Each structure stands twice: as C-alpha cells, then as structure tokens.
Length: 342
Image (cartoon, rainbow, N blue to C red; front, side):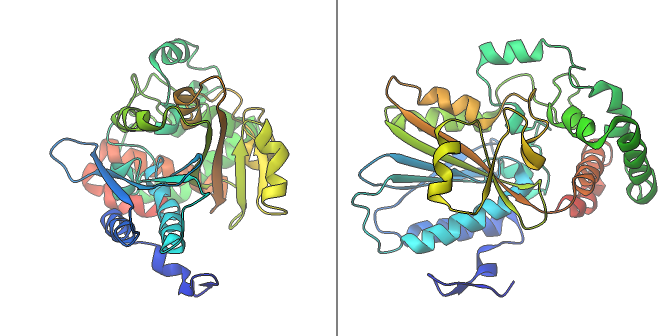
C-alpha cells in the first residue's frame, strides 16, 4: 500500500478510490490538469448520476483506447491505472505519440454498487454483439456449456444468508468440483446464458446502453489505421499476478518484445492457460464488437484484456452468487453482500 511509483513520486494508494463517485471526481480532476485534453460525459441511466466519462488526449499517430469498469466492481483497478497514466502525461509532448482515449466506468451502476453486472443484471462482456451475431448466440442451446445443469447452485431464488456464505456454497463448490471438475464449472459459468434475466452471467436480450453510447461516440475514430485497445479486469489468476488475454495473432508474437517477462499472455479464444482457459464458447466480448468498428481494409487492431488476479476462483464465484442473490431477492441488503464482491 505504501509503494511509490518511481517516475511520479506519488504513493500508489492515492490512485485508488473507495467508491465510484470518488473515482469519477479524481478522474475528471486529473483530465483537467492536462493542457488540451477533452472530457466527454455520457449519461447511462436517464435522470441519474451514473455516467461514463471519457478523456481524449490527442496525438499525431494511431489510437490507444483504455477501458475500466465493464465489470463494474472491477473498475477500481482500471480507474487507478488511468489516474496514474494521466499523472504521467502532464506537460508531456504528444508529437509522435498516439491519441489516447481513456473510458472511465464503462458500467457505472455496477461500479457504484460493487457488482459485476449492470443496472439490468447484464454482463456487458457477454453482451457486446451486433444484432446479427446476438441473434445467433441467443438461439443456441442454453445448456451448451452445462450452465443449466448447475443453475440451482448458481442461482438460488431467495435472499442470501450467512449459512449460504459459509456452509452451503463452500460445500456445494467442493461437491461440484469433485463431481464435475473445477474447469468444467468455470466453463459452464463463463460461457454465459441468455435465458434467465436474474441469473449470473446473463448476457441480455439486446445491446445494452453502455455499448450503444460508446459505439456511437467512437464513430469519430472509425478511420484510424492502427488501434490498440486494453480492457482492464480483476479476479482471475493468482493473487497479484497480471495476465494479458488476447485472441492470438500479432499480439501474441510481439508482446514479449514490448513487455519482456511481465505480464504473461494467454489466448482465451483457444481456452489456453489458467486464466484464459474455459472461454472457447464465450461470446459477446467487448473486443468482438469494437473490432468491427475499426475493421476497414488496412486497419491494424490489437485488443487485449488485462486481468489482475485477486482471490481464488471459488471465492470469486461465491461472492458473485451471493451479491446477485441479494440484488434480485433482497435489494435492501445488497450493500452488505456487495462487501464480498468488493
């Protein structure tokens, strides 16, 4: 907590926030300190104070996009990274540098309430599909990855209890890990489902507002010839370990030259590695949507998911199940159960 970022001379913990509105205030203030930087604000929920804030620092070549908070509660790490970057960019020349776009709190409701899903209980990183692709995915067998076989364990239709947290869920996870295998349980969960609006990993029945807003806003950059997009998440992997997930291609070949030794890289589309494994059937990733935005004939697109490990997979799953139970069946108690996801 008291580590110092050498190039800045500030303690790391000054970039982290206790809540969404604190993080947003810090972000807006940091943008205002950079000469020529633009701040754009998009209202996600009408007549509310849940906003996506976007910083644009213009450069002379290419485009680098950095997103935080697609999985709301995970946004605090991405927000801190963005604040550190904004500090580094103060009074720096942008000649010969890319235009930088920092998208802060892609899912502001989820970030504010320490939940993975948005105001409609939709997982935005299973929802990012144009209509034609979405229609195909939503029509597939809902049990294609075994989700429906485990829905009673994933989605108890009642308010959560301490018994659930410390006895039922841990024992259930041990049982299903023995019977089905931990990898198969992860596979069933992360493949998502599109039939139960109150269930975990629900991908929605249409493109969600956050995606629509960003899709339309990004029109101004649609002709860029070189685009790098980094989407920050937390949860999977060993605690404190940093993993870049990508879909292969040039990123896999060149990243070791960019970042020798750290972090590790895994191919999630092929289900490789301890972090990337299990995603072979998962669709609706943010990269699927936005690579189409920039897919002109000569564009070079690198989209990476950056994942920071926190707790074990079982602990993460337990937290998500408990918070989702509370959100749907005991909303007045959601704040308590969100301490588990936090």
